[in-house]
Amino acid sequence: MLHELAEVDGLYQSDVIRLLIRRAHVARFKGKKKVTKAPAPRKTNGKAKAKRKARG
Image (cartoon, rainbow, N blue to C red; front, side, top):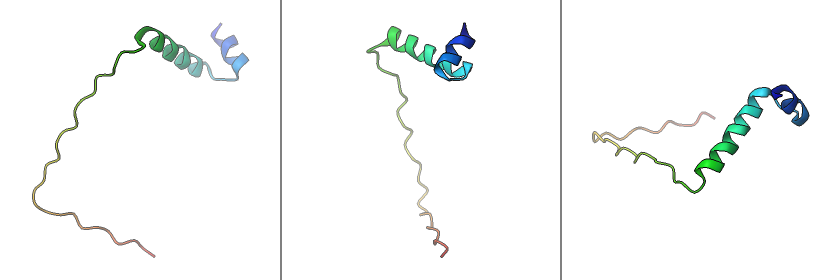
């Protein structure tokens, strides 16, 4: 069945599986927000990085 689905759409079998998983996930978790981590604050040690000169 997987082979037939992939062949009809001109996709690899792994692509068909990926698409089906995405569709199922959207259907089940529609409207829920993703939990994201807050970005960690940058540490500074007082030294500025020197910019590289572009080679011409």
